[in-house]
Amino acid sequence: MPNFLHFLFPGHVGPEHTQDLRIVLAAVCTLALYTILYRENPIFRFFEHLFIGVGAGYTAQYLVATILEPEWRKPLFVDHQWWRLPMLLVGLMFYFIYFRRTAWIARLALLGLLALNAGTTFKGFVTEQFPQVAASFKSPVVLNAASHPDLYRSISNTVFIVSLLSVMSYFFFSVEHKGPLARSARLGRWIAMLAFGAIFATTIMARVSLFIGRASFLIFDFAYHFLGLTIPGTTPPAH
Image (tube, rainbow, N blue to C red):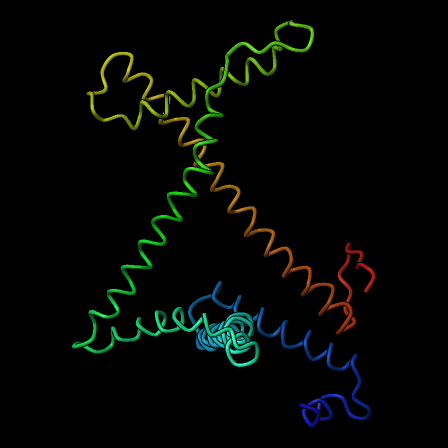
């Protein structure tokens, strides 16, 4: 890396040159990935594979640094916590799935894991979902501290109750949707579509936020601070 930095930046190589190299690499990777907006091309494919490879390498390093080293190697061989050995053996049982004659050993470990996950999931459902179910029982008439009707909260609770019952009626298939049930189910379908649309819009907002971050980086960090270019109508932030 120092020789490469000396090639790019003749003379003394300092921390500022390392930061410049990071900006250049980040800008090149960003622009290369955005070439997919034009069409499928070898440049995008190369940087796509590079991104996946870097992600896989980072994940492997993260597992070693956060699980294998602090949870297994150090407790076993440094702190001598030998009671962890049975858990290690259970984990190794999963690798028997690659051998036909010993695959049943992996199934035993998988059975224990599924049972543990089932118990954990049920506990989470009881502790997280039950309070939500209990909170859905709202009164359509809410009184304030002076024992007068609170108009805003009363209307809010009424809208919530109507939305809840209508959406539930839409997914109630034990009885044919006729008469009042059909009208309630139709209202529930519209309310569900509005909710799904709001969720989708939130997802789009998150993606736009990511794009704004990348565009801000290309305009200010790369084009302005690194290349010295200015864009009319923009005020670059302090760097």
